[in-house]
Every structure is written in structure tokens, then in C-alpha cells.
Image (cartoon, rainbow, N blue to C red; front, side):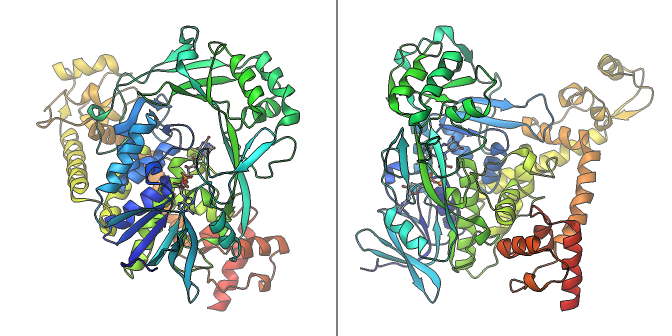
Length: 623
Ligand code: FAD
């Protein structure tokens, strides 16, 4: 049967990509359906209950700046917060939170259930409805047909999922959930390039069987960081410690002795795993000279005894898992509650996507999340938001939004995927962004909230808070600029001991803040103290923009130069094979990637500046 109402956007899959996609589409006013296997697993963390970390928190803050759900849910569910790289520059600082997986999921569910224009439906999606070559809806396992103008597919690790524990394997989307077989087959029949990837998870452990007294405790930061621009530490539930233990020679011997039953090392698993989140057996092989690895023992929540031993993801047989866990200090009597496993799944070559995340082969069909070859909740959430927003915009006959590399990590993520594709699960790092200093986690709202408001995804409440913050930064900057400290006065005497050289002329507070070693709090109240209470996040913006002014403006010049190139579009029908002077290899790379702009072409691995010049000449001849 056809479901009585017709939707603007249908999102398939209620993981991290799907929930952000559905919320973003609905926030624009589009009539949206979120169709997922199970309403109870909406927003479920398949692996480690932690959000953020280096490069990843930048994505979370960008999702937040566009009014997405992930950061606020983290503030509502986070049980240990830390700032990573706190002694390094602001570009690489990152927020990481251990989450209570139940609280996190509940916070996401609450946002979904209270979102206007959003309908939830529990059922497996088995097929796409295609009309005149375009995606126009979905069919569920019981034959219900949902019609729509656009479809966003976010099926995660479920498409053709196979779970491996030792040499035994079975079909599954993740432990305890069914795979998506019918839909995977239907999609394989379409002209998308499909391949296999794999990822894995460690066994979970019962805290009551662990001796924490011999492990190193790892508390959260004293001043608890906050994930959302709309969040505060009062939202955080009770904070608890993580712990650290180590693998040892015995652990490594146990792992080596089980390699003949490892699905990875006996060729049973064909998919490529995440290089930056390797399994413990991978680590033992790749870093054979290391005789110990640090293992973080992380609580899964406040109301469960389950622990997540971060660092021993494995698909070795269960008996080997048990032995290796029990070889570590504090875990001698550990009880495993769930075995670790690896999962292989289908993913689509992201080079078959447009920058809007719409597929090139089928109008109206958008892909987001793990199915595009990425790994991680944050990468999935960010893509989901973009795909959901663009599907909604398309349904409203509006142009897509495609953030650039100099605007957002989201722009870096999509551009990397589209220009280079990926042969292994892709995760975000700050090193992937060439304009790190402008793409900081502290300024994602300054970069994106106004754009989000224009696009219709930012609520009145967030917009008001953002405007107030922006004005407060401006007021405080002006106040400091016009507050002067004169030599040989009580104010100068107060600051001189902190300066390398005492002040010998008049300085305003902003100039003093530029001096090395001087913090906002050292100078803010020296003269004309502010009338309003300055929020810590406002002070941070004032300080960073002053201290890094020179570097930031240099990056702005680079960005402007690139932007001029960025604007040169490459027509979709460009016949690369007929361009004189390009090597066959370069031609093939361009044919595979079909870059949309000259700048995108220049970022494809192996595309040289000489090849770009030839392309420019060819384009001029064409026009
Ligand atoms: P998912 O979170 O997988 O969500 C997919 C959703 O789609 C589910 O709700 C599912 O029920 C639904 N669905 C699928 N098919 C259908 C259908 N046909 N009909 C209806 N609903 C459907 N990330 C890391 O960063 N580090 C790690 O170490 C790590 N390890 C992992 C280990 C395992 C075993 C797994 C499974 C994942 C791991 N991940 C890891 C990846 C992380 O879980 C994913 O990157 C993230 O969850 C992807 O989000 P997603 O929204 O794309 O997909």
C-alpha cells in the first residue's frame, strides 16, 4: 500500500548520520520521515561511547553551529570531559567526552520526538522507488510504500553486513541487529561503485570483575569543557573516571598464538579496516617492536557495570579474547559480557557523489555516513546534516549548500571523499585541513551559524544566543582597544611583572594581550572593567583573534587566492580523454573523480600543477 501522506524527504537509517539528516531536513520545514529498523536504537553508538577527540570535535561543533543534535546530546550524556592538546595552539585543541550510552541515546530520541515536521517509522527498508531515473521513495519489508521528493540513505555498517568472531561468521548489521541484505542487493544492481570495508570493536567487560586499584585513574578536566555552544556544565550528569592499563609481552604472545584463527590474517575478511583505529592483532603485527600498548578502560555509563576497553578491538576467537584480556594488569579475573568482533559491509565509492552528497547516478538520492567510506559518529553526523539539509533544499527547489574547505571541516571531509575517494575507512584529523587556524573548534559558530540561519536550520533560540555572543565579542574588543595603560601608574605596576619587558609607553589592553605569556584574565580588569559579565567563550574569542591575528590574516589571503581558482567550474560533460598533453593516468583519475571545479581537480592525488595548467588552457579553448 502507499502510505497516505507524501514526504519531502525520507531518511533511511537512524544512526548518527540519519538522525542529523532527519532533524536538519525537518528544521528547514521539509516534511520528513525517518525510517529505521528499530526506534529503540535511534542514535545508538555501535562502538565506543565517546564523542569528539582530535579533528572529530571540530565536526561536532560544526554540527552544533548548524543546530544539530550531537553536541547537546553529549552535554546531556557526557560522564567524563577533557580538552585534548590543551597546551598546544587553538587550531588543534579538541574536546572529548566519554558518554553514558543510554543517556546519549535518550537525548537524541528526545530531540527527534520533539522535532516539528518529523515523523518516525520503525521498519526495514527493502527497496527504492525510482521514477524516471530519480529516487522517489522507499518500500519497507511489509510492502508499505512511502513516497517522497528525495531520499537520504544512511544505512551504516548494515548493507551486506557480516560479523566475524574468529573463523566463525554470520550476517548482521552490528551485534544484536539484523543486516540489510535486500536493500544491499537492490543497490548493487544500480550503477554505483560498491566495495567492502571492515571495522571492529573490543569485548566488553563487567566492572565488578576488575581490580581498579592497580590501574591509573584518569579523571576528567577540573574545569569541565562543554561540547555545545548552547550547553553548560550544569547539564552534565555525574562525572566519573576512566582508567588506564597496558598490554604486555604475555598479551602479545597470546595474540600471536591465535593468529592462525584470525579472520583478518587467514584471508576470511576481505574488507580493509581503519588504519587509525587498528585492531589489537593489527597493532601487534604492525608495531612488532613495541612490547606494550596503553589500554583505556572506559565506563559505558552510570547505570551499567559494562566497561569498554579502548585499544583492544579484535576479531580473534573468543577463547583468545578471554586470555588476552586476562593477561593485563587489573583484568586477571575479568568477565567478558560481550565478545569483540569485526564487521564487513558494503560502502559506495564517494567519488560517485556531488558536493551536496546527492549521488551522481540518481537524482534525488543522497548518501551519508559510513556508507560513504567514513568511520566515526562525528563524520557520519556531519555528513548526515549536510545530506538532510540539501535533500530538503532540493525538495523546496532551492540550491544546495556545499561548504568549502576554508569554511568548515565538513567542507574538507566532503572534498577529500569526492576528490580522492577512499580505500580504507576515512576519519577526520586536523592535519587534513590546510586552513586549520581559521577552522578552529572554538569558532565553528562564528563560521557557520549565520549561514545555517540563512539556510533555515538554525532556531530562533540559538540565533538569539549567537547574536548576543557576537555582539559581546565586539563590545569587549572595543572596550579593550580603548582602555589605555600608562607607564608608572598602579595599572602598569600590576602588569609589569608578567611582561618580558616593562611597558615604557601607553598601551591599550588589546596590545598588551598580544604580548607572549599574557592571558585575557591578566589584563581584562586592569582598567575600565567591563560592565557585563564576560562569558568565558567570549573572552576566548577575543584572546585568540588578537594573539593569532597575523597568521589568521595570512591564511585569509591564501584562501582568497584559492577562491579565485575554486570558481572555475569543470563541466560535467568534459571529455578528459581528448585533452592533449595529459598522461593516461591523469586522464583516468579525472574521469574517475569527475571534479566539479579546477581547485577540486588540483587536490586529486597525482594531479600535478602542469596538468592543471593544461586543463585551464583546454577550458579557455572550449569557451
Ligand atoms: P550507523 O550508526 O551504523 O546507523 C545505521 C542505521 O541505519 C541503524 O539505525 C540501522 O538500524 C539503520 N538501517 C540500516 N539499514 C536499514 C534498512 N534497510 N532499513 C531501515 N533501517 C536501516 N567508529 C569509530 O570512529 N571508531 C571505531 O573504533 C569504530 N568501531 C566500530 C565497530 C563496529 C563493530 C561498528 C559496527 C562500528 C564502529 N565504528 C567505529 C563506526 C561507527 O559506529 C560508525 O561510523 C557510525 O555509527 C556510523 O554512523 P551511520 O549513521 O553512518 O551508521
